[in-house]
Image (cartoon, rainbow, N blue to C red; front, side, top):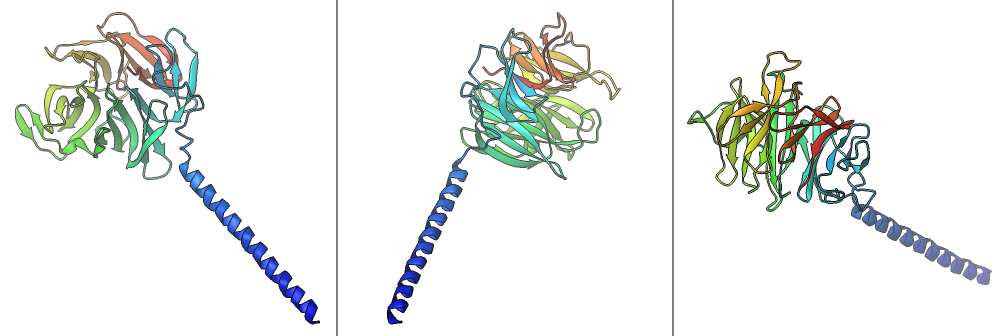
Length: 332
């Protein structure tokens, strides 16, 4: 009996040692799995093709949001219908330089959004959560300064029952301006204070300091010129919405309210910044978009689920670039 008892005790010790070893191995494997998962890139912002980069393809390639998939896509110039859709899912998109900006509407009430900053391969660099519905997105020509607008309330500029929130992020310093509503505004030569001030539709000059945007206050909209370093803004012209600065910095494409009909209130125009003279574009339909310059003399815009282009000098006629698309951009 004594021998049997010794053997049983020995077996029991071996069994516990085996169980302990299995538990340690399982714990180590679990810890490794968690660390590995934490180190993986977000698959919603990863691309399936290493060649799907902002500087890939032919010069002048059009980037946009594919409406069928919601993903970022690219189309080569002169190849209508030949699109590649491998980017992340976005509700609003813009890209320039080596940077892309993606706004995603999150499910749930109240409405909230994600702001995704992407690198040249459309991999996620930074993610921020903010209230509201994605509305406008813009990247400076250098790719270093970003701006976005969300609807804090309402979902259309065609009525007065809306409120916006516009933010600016400087990637060089990491400094985020959560809302530019507090920037000192000069209107008609005087400092303007009002609780109803709303900004939207930012567009940047090449120096990454000067910007243009729309400001609305007391029932009127204005084009403002802003200075980030001086933290100031001044109104230049009334009835200018969603400006887009030309590559040479001399003109602004924008939508102008030409009708009180909420179903078709706007007409695309181009403004000469030196003279403040404007002219309508050949696109006579009511376009609710922030146009994008696709070259020195052409602009593109989204209209009814397609991206169109028109000459910036008011001549010619609208031409459809790609169907099932919004948020056009041509990174330089």
